[in-house]
Length: 299
Image (cartoon, rainbow, N blue to C red; front, side):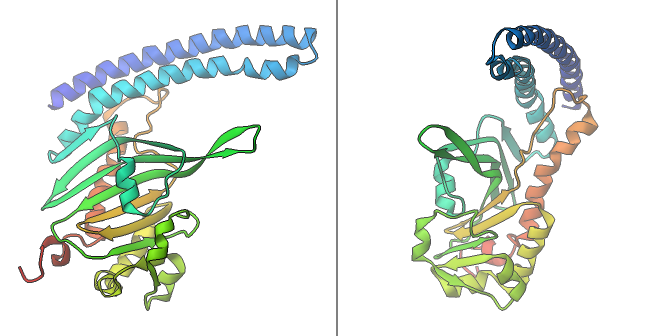
């Protein structure tokens, strides 16, 4: 496996160099042509300045097309092998992602006009399954004349599945505005902990207060606050049935490769962090405790 990875890595690095050089050359030629056309338009038309702006776009599109092809090939040919070699109990698919239905069931992120998800990772350890992917949600905004799209969520979404089945629905969210638009909140009751600092950071709701306090012990509250400090962005957590959903709104993608960046094993190792985070969250969220691992306490 190691030999195969290095062979693919070397081939892709050579291809990256060729494509990067070609992308720069073609973009440069297109830019010169656009500059000449722009100069002509500025001299011959009063509206030339406005039209000239759009002539800057072709070189950008040329580079983006090369970047997209490179990233797609890297994700499909190399990254799955590297991740599998790093953790044997792991699977990766660049084109798959968390579904809208799963996000809807999680009840922590509101859905809008546009939904996209990619870079799915499946991971299992000690009877716990973890499914995660990058998630991007946009809301359509229109004033009657112009239509635009505003990002409401961009980050990572996790689903942890464990043996124990719970009865209630419990939600903890860091920002009241981030997850607004969820009308089902009217069925839940706002609850607070004795930890004043926790209540200042998080908004908590449940339909089963006894179970909520059983799950969110003072120790668990401290762990959730530690997670909030540890991972940049706004977080939301929900527990229902035998799943824990977690969303981190941090305006980033896990595997954001650049055509201009030399490809090496050290560079690729920096993208293994999402896998480490999944393992860390299993510990940070106390999912190895008996209350999650056994279908009935005492068994």
